[in-house]
Image (tube, rainbow, N blue to C red; front, side, top):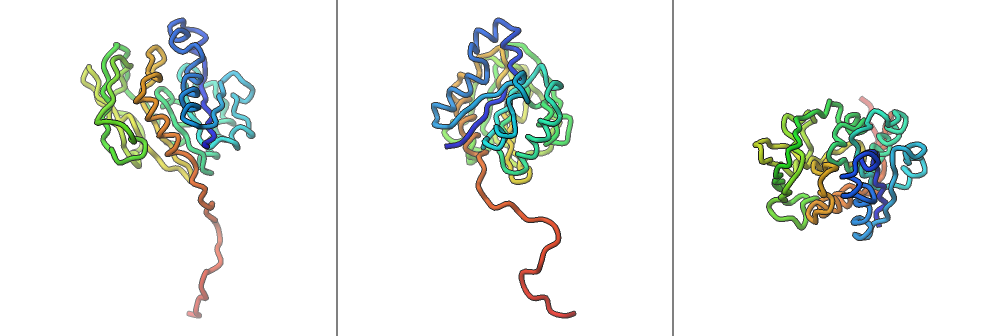
Length: 240
């Protein structure tokens, strides 16, 4: 059983009646529900909790952290960001969703601006599976089609992914690298694009499959931590 913490800033749900109607339990609640149904041990955390709900105890007991943010990236405390970064380097998985591309933690781990083009015009998104052998693509067809979503377009200012799994096409003509996997230290990161708050994207079964697969993919492997610094030789070194 994978221990998952679903983090959401939980601000749109407090301000926007449309979002409240679509996600009455919050975006975090909707995601947590289908991950629980998949058999994971799931907890949620939000921005306005003490330490943003990400105490040292919570982080140390999290295998995979799911991150959704938008309005309040700057309100996330730098000390918490540093703790999350260290946990990723130590082996915790991180799943960054939609507008989480601009979160402090994603930008810190990427080392770039993570900027992009965007447009909100109720347009179709077709997410093409360009790496069908990747574990995150298990159980999917050739593409996922969403009737209405916010557009994200290239150039997406991120490092080249270690694995590119999905590429999106939008009705207005843009394309976007929408499923990107990275390795950082002992940990793995996956960025998944869709999930604008005014659309019911997280109820889509294929989207739920991607997120569920990603949690399994990102879970720590349990491998031994590497040892750094001055090292004694494994074999006798002959005199030169």
